[in-house]
Image (cartoon, rainbow, N blue to C red):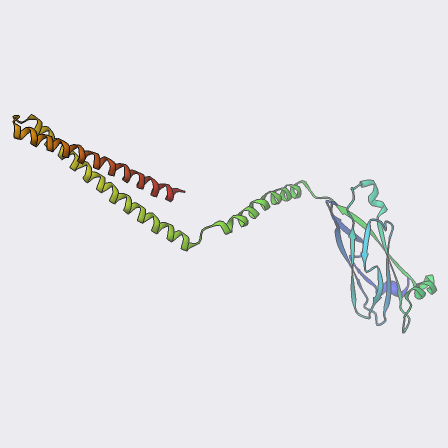
Length: 245
């Protein structure tokens, strides 16, 4: 065991854990800490290079510094028989003074100067409870989005007060029209009663002429209230239809 192997610290030290489902990129971090007083060169290798993207996969670690390496597992169909084939190795060596060519450092390195730290990959599949929670959250998301979409359509307080004012005006207009219709109906009823009394009275020339005058007045008066009733009904229907729509 070399001196470098004793001082280099890996976090996690043994396993790289990836949590499924593996339908999207899954990222885990590996921290490399150098507590020594010299710079260290590192290089990250894997047995399945097509399945992983490692950033950075090589570089320098200053004395006392820590470097975080992101290991990104690409989407794939999980096969339990394949998990033992996924392994990583962190290769490390002390950097010579004024290093400029990293490839030359690795090429000229002696086996005794290298440290190899091996890591195995652990794949964690979601449990049934996690699947149910994910399904519930996916169902609730459209409801939240729909609520946000419906938010702007809520009328402002100013528009609500304006509608209330129009409603009060319409109700007052309807009451006024109903009152006028009632008055016209009472007047029409009184005129009819006068006409009936005149027709029952003893007939004479003067009474006949007077009755004819009253009948003409009765017919003209009865036609006028009926016309007003129709007009009032049209206005009431118009204002109520405008308020409802």
